[in-house]
Length: 605
Image (tube, rainbow, N blue to C red; front, side):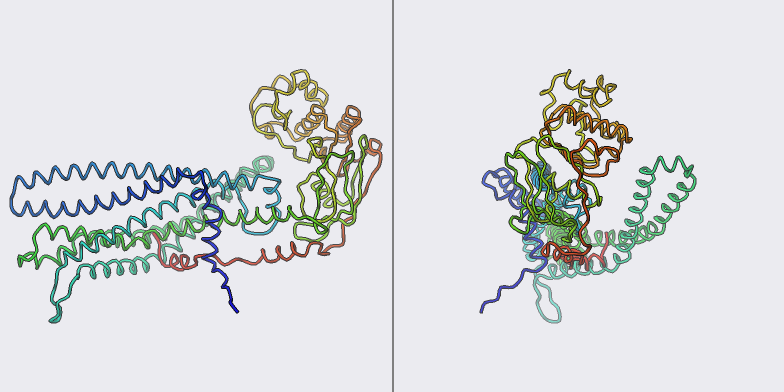
């Protein structure tokens, strides 16, 4: 019997990252990024070649100076100018190619994640399930940037350091010669010294960095608390002003800011210790191989040029060996950002899979041309799989007006099912197969742009003439907005809540749909205005089927019939698979690449 081992968390982490971000490099039409990668690799090789040439030039220059050769020294100055120009050109080209590659990858991945997230109500559904995928705006805007930029930076710098190490270890080994230790001739002593020196530096930095990491984490937490306090004060501006609470709020914000001070001082002390060591470490690295090689130089077995060349080669080897330590913080930040993007992608895939369910244990949306709107044998579940509404049947014919009230949560869930955005439950839903249905909730969507576009949404604004637009506004009591039809603004913020809901009814009058679904669409209006809006669409769209989901006192006579909903028994599990998945999601997940966390706890920058 052959047993296939489960992939480790690290393997799954890289596999999932390649799955979501890898197609950018593997697509048939993606020849441009592959060409840029090849160009970047060649530029890295050129950078290492120039570093080697500079190292050889150092030996040639000092040998010329040792011989007091004016012609040789002048020739080396000319060679240095060429090396310098080559370095400038190579580094500039490397920067341009690298940044173009980073932006291209970020743009592609951003488009892919937004495309998956902002499709078929997944952005809404993902917010309703448990898991670490909150703040999708930050994950898309910032974490994707870090995931792509840092990945290319780390890969490029690691490739450079590997080439540097391979090249300069050979040079340093040849320059080391042989030394006699305890009657034994030992080769490559400078290579051994470089490895030991880099290892010692990593250990000391590790020990010095432990308090710094804790102080940095504490400071970031305090800074986040201060920012949250400022955001909360801004969002609560009106209540604070009405209550004259500015003095108390000012004292609270100042007290929260003062908590940053201790961690700032601890971080400063940690940085001071680390910088003091780093300064000495870098300075000694430039001198140590020269001090070690001075006896051989004084004996005449090592020229001045080769002595200086060994110093440079030693620095290059120690710098290459220090790559893991130098990039530990960057690697940790990259890992965290990739994990956050993957968690958002996983949430989107979960709700997409749940929405795609078909059969007896799913809500089946029949989007075909139909002369009716309704549900058959419908059971609605909460996002955790427990039942909310059981065995509902409802059919609405053209021209019928139905009021659905009762349990508010069950009514809201029914509205979302009929709007096609609630996938949890089972049964059959008959929906129009074309754009004949308009669903309006308590917060109608108004796209940014002109008022004309907001009124005509989702149709193009130029499909309706000025008279129709102005007539729709006038019919709902918004005639004062007609002169502002071409004004660009964020109308959801400019208009009051009541005006936004009136505008949604003006949109219905303008678009004249055959089916109208309203979910608490008048709760910002006074009772008289709400009834007037309902009578307006009932009179002007007498052939339309209308379903109002939610409480609307005093409007019963507008509707042909009324349905009162009762919530299902609490705790009854309707969707076992969904329920088990939600319970699993509540368990904290172990972090991939945990070795980075363990190292980071002992090292700071």
